[in-house]
Amino acid sequence: MQNIRTSRLLLIPGITFLLFSCVSQKKFVAAKSDLTKENETLTSYESKLTSLDEQRAKKQQQNELADTVDLQIRKFINKTNSEIDTLIDKNKVLINGNLVSKDDLNRIMKAIASTKLASQLINKKILFLEDLIKTNMVVKLDQDVLFEPGSYKVAPAVIANIGKLFEPAAKEIDKFASKYQDFTLSLVISIKGYADATTINEGSSLYNNLKARLALSNSNPDAKELNKELSRARAEEVANLFKQYAKGRGDNGLYTKNIFYIYEGKGEQFPDPKITNYSMDDPRRRIVLLFWSIFPD
Image (tube, rainbow, N blue to C red; front, side, top):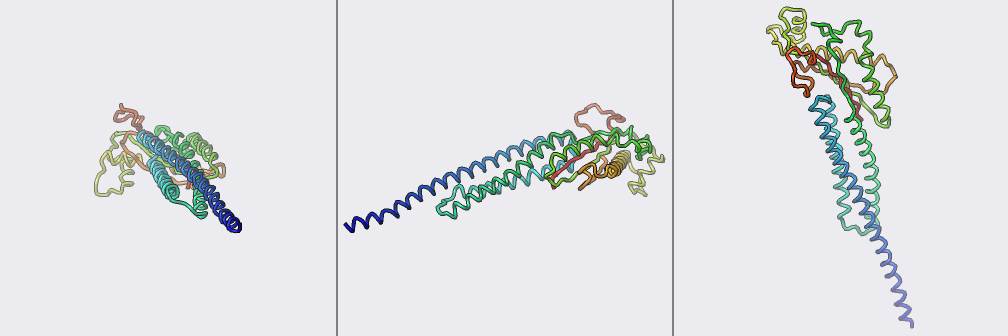
């Protein structure tokens, strides 16, 4: 009789351990399944980033995206993909591992929580990037309106009404920034100046001014060099005018904070790749393109 009682007592811990093992195993299976789903979500983000990168490249080819912004977007995509790959690889170690202890279960639960948090942040950035890429970020300014022939300085009468040219872009910037107040944002203003292939007469005031800007004292610049410097001077002028305009708006917009200006002269290059019938002195070549971009720090 005593032996029977002893056997029953010995069976109870065994049954308890078996029940505990079954429950724990179910928890491990469920936890691994949850972590696998998080990895699948991360993988879907990589697909979205690939699509966004294709849209970026297309915009860049059409000259609808400033070079600096294009570089920022590519860096953002590469960095985000790297973050995703790191998360997925860490999670796979847990998913494929032989987890048996309570500590192992705690590790996988922490991985699920941290991955969900990271996934939410990545998703927010992707939504931001989607919105940015689909937004028109370029304003075409007619040089014939801004500059008199043979000049790269804007006339005072035009400066007095410069807000009419810049206000549409400023409103778009404010509108976009207001949607993403959770981010610390920086604004980049990029200016590209263009010129046609018209010859700038040697000895003219414009010729002498451009030569001085080029700092060529012992040689004469050719037409391409002169037109490139003319386009650069006009881009610089527009950048300076936008700086003054932005300061004048005061605290009207977040975009006046963390703002960077970049300008360059593209010379006789064609500003619009979609136009295939440019002539040498085509007025459609004499433009200044103002690009804006807001990006998370």
